[in-house]
Structures are given as C-alpha cells and as structure tokens.
Image (cartoon, rainbow, N blue to C red; front, side):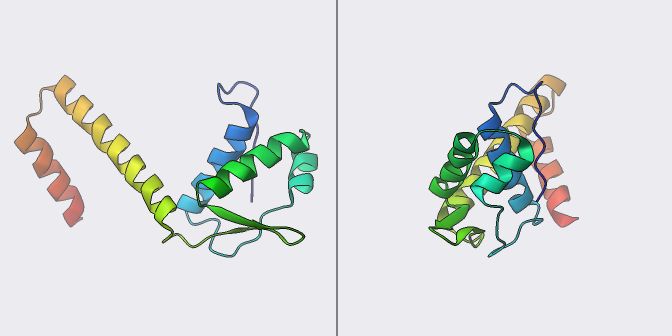
Length: 123
C-alpha cells in the first residue's frame, strides 16, 4: 500500500490517507482481506501523528471499507458490502452530473448524450 501526503493539498492529512486507501480499493490494488499497516506503523512511515492515522482508519471503518480487530489490525472488507456499493453509486452519480454539465455547456442535447452513453456501454 502506498500513501503520499501532500502539503499543497486542500484536503486534511487524514482525508488524504482515507481517499488514497479508498482509491486503491476501487482500483483493486487493495483486495478483500488484505491487511493494512498498523496505525502506528503508517504514522511512523508518513511522519505524522497516530491520531491522524487513527481518524483515517476510523472513517474507513465507518464507511464500510475496512474492519479493525483489536490486536489483529485492519483488513479490507469485501467490495460487495452495501456501504461500499453506496460509495460507487455516489461516484457514478457525480460522474454523470459532470457529463451532463459538460453536455449543457457544449450544447449537446439529451438524446445525443444518451447515445454517447449507449456507445460507451457497448465498448
């Protein structure tokens, strides 16, 4: 697992960690039952506070991406988890909204936009 912290990012550090782990799950770089580094280990590797990594892991757990077992660490949960599915749906909705907005700016009508989607689905 690779996490890179940027001082230029507008996101707080815990959010950068959380989003990068989620992205690796979405991209299948991190798979079901893969173990994450311990909170202390990740904090040490990144040179940040344990409190920061704890917050990132806690939020990932609340969102259904990981499970943490005391004394055993954190592991990636199955992707068919309902909370993870909800995250995918949110990403899809956001992407569709961006496409709709771009189509409006470009003067592309609804029918043409639907045709584009159908063509992409057939690829």
